[in-house]
Image (cartoon, rainbow, N blue to C red; front, side, top):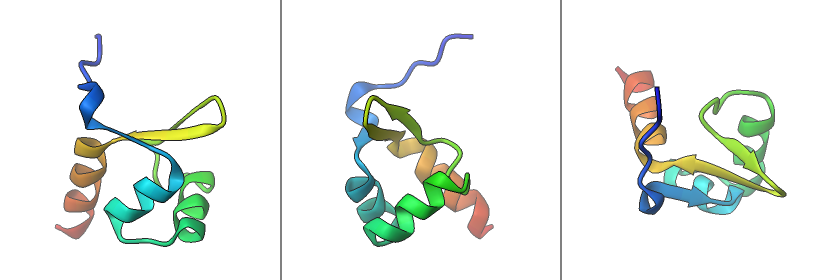
Length: 63
């Protein structure tokens, strides 16, 4: 099954991901490297995530 991810939906970099989820750079990096944000992928030297998947992940976690 092919994923249909809108390029505008992507968030690039630990700092930008952290801003979306309300965490510091260090907290976000720790969450990524320990697997607490499983939808984040490493592309080269940068991390990238789908905005929609992150929001869905935290909405599900809050329910």
